[in-house]
Image (cartoon, rainbow, N blue to C red; front, top):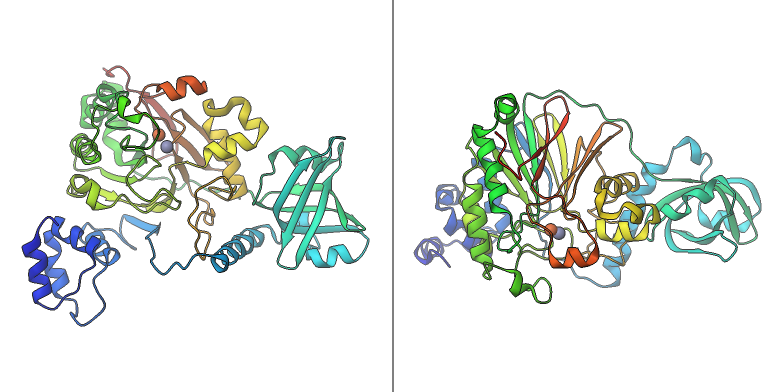
Length: 471
Ligand code: FE
Ligand code: ZN
């Protein structure tokens, strides 16, 4: 504990404080007057409660310029086990099937139980993909599941539906239409949840997106990163002044630091082997961002928070120095944030590995075209559809569904920049500030570090290269 007297004084006045909340308070003593307004006889003070207090103090919430629409907080009433698993998949099925229901392609949708009891010439089903394989003859065989049962679905070679076969992954929810025979459905078409067209409401600010700085790694590109910070401070070329001045938000999509013990032999690749030193260094760099800019940070798989997704914000216990910077907001991965009139979905992108690996078309361009993989996730309306290959936290609800279609979908993780606009959604991967690691060299990945995507008020995406100081 950083400030035992402060906590003791709270305890003396009758307050019970959860340990992580106590840490947070001792790092933010300005909260004490607000805590004094609480009823000491109420439940122990939680981290969530004090974090909300600081959010209010820093001026965000509904009606404000910044609003956290989804910010995952670890809940401790998770019991685990079969019950959770069932409830989790039920919520996944319900949310995604409701997006598919009512689609004209899925006219006359029926339950799986109904479909298997009779021969029907034309029917539609919505189900969770529990099995997928390709037969020797080149047909795709699926097993679809809903709450009423399971059925085999065949996408016959040469049919319209067949071309969707390679795109289908385990555990996602899709719609199919076709005809049913005995115990099997022949699908002529496949429907993914997809996204409707979203308008871009014009804003008077711009947003810069970064990720994967991997501070502490030998490969962290400090000089390029300092070029970026200098640019934010107005040191860029004349013609970029307007853009640089318009930046109101910097979003950081995880992997702030390289971490310790994340992979075998990591120690040899670290200049800062201590996690707190890594975060201190990151904080020192970020603190040079001009005060007019709010920096919003989520964790990645290298950061010091729970690895299972959704990942709660990096806790103050490790990143105290970051929490002390007044214009920084720490959020979970994923998190849904409203910035002025825009909705941003920020997620580290850990699942990009599994989706790239699962879909042959994505495997071709792999890590060089991250926006294609992001687009696939967007169309599946799920940040991490393949349950089995991910480290997902077994909870009652599936919180990785893309419920609300954002104006900006921001991820990192693959260390290559990429962007596209799909139905109005700005799909952006912010690359890295780490040069190629020995692991990436072995895996054949060619990172494009030091390039920062910026979205301006009109929704135009500009990439600025900070590998050399822009002058
Ligand atoms: Fe990374
Ligand atoms: Zn990562």
